[in-house]
Length: 324
Image (tube, rainbow, N blue to C red; front, side, top):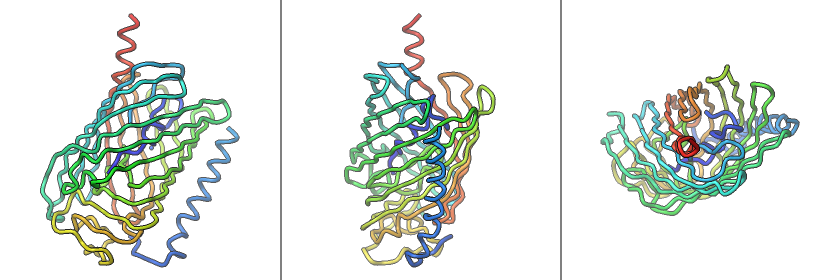
């Protein structure tokens, strides 16, 4: 599972929030919830127009950037932790590039039959674009991932993958609605949800929500997400062991979790389809430290997850020390 570029977009100082069981069914019924979700995001987009990737520099900052983050997710499938380090350069206040690599620590639940394991994730390079405007803030990140992780541990697909995410937001005093849409050939990990699997297959993904700033240091937020895969999908489980399941066979889990009983399974777009919602509380006690606690409900997988993240902005520390 790759890290989503949306984490970068939501971590910009001017783009808050910093930190944000359905069985297989006929397509007409399955699109009912996405339809309502898209309607909600269109409303958020209208509001906007009226109005872990490394953390971005503050507006106007250029030069060296670096960010180190440790985050984790716990649910009925087990615990997944990630140490993600990156280094980059902001050429202008609008454009920058980063490179990084995550390290995963996986502790499966005993019910999955999997074993604990640690390993390197997929190194990545991202190109980021950002335009801040009183009417609406816009950001876009294109990320490419090299298949260096072990697919047998669910840390890679064995193929090169990418994610392209676009973000709009606008602040109304302390309230900041946001809208995100993207295209990818993998379902990305986020600060709020380190998934118990990695996927390979095309998908479009959407998210809409809002954050609210509570005083100088704290913020809260909530969002809904929708992932719409298309074409053949392959799931590589982080928490299960066993042989691959051939194309056309159905997952062994009765709860709609193909990653629970199969280490690798190939099938239709239903395998990677997901939707749900998240809520979080974040704190930035200093310009260099970000903390977050979150909750995510995956409706498709009937899965409740709690998460945490702790991030240190090495780049800002460097700029502060060098300016003295």
